[in-house]
Image (cartoon, rainbow, N blue to C red):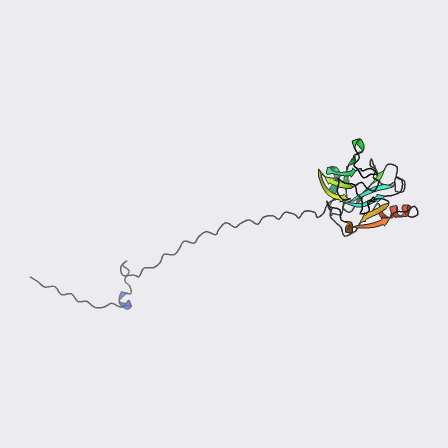
Length: 219
């Protein structure tokens, strides 16, 4: 029986150079397949900012006799369609009790459009001092609150609420014989009356004509 002899010796990296068999080569990590770029999230188109403010009551005038005026202004930078707005006057008697029946209130539906920065004057049908305004079927005597409605929502108001007579702490008519003019810095309506938003001027027989003319027809 023949005997076979095997010689074993250590191998070095140089000994393996040139060998390509699978067992003789060091495993090489496969080149990773690049992941596709994620679909970019589209940038949403920004919504244009809403126009600040809305229509406001900019002047309330309750003068002698029938010199009664309400001025509505557009302090925004866009034209406003008036068709959704109503001026509401709630009437109270001399005893500060709510008037009943057909004279309980006046509702004036506004029409047309009001340009940015423009004003609309509503006047009593028998007012004579300022005649450039639009005749409105209303009357108020100093204790009658006035509101501007958008749809059915009160957005602006003169008075201390629509359910009670507008009187001061001495039980006197708070809105009699006066001009209330909204100060220029007020650019938005307020559903709650705030006296500090208004300039107040008492009306007398001597100053009535000049005072009324100076506050109407402009913001």
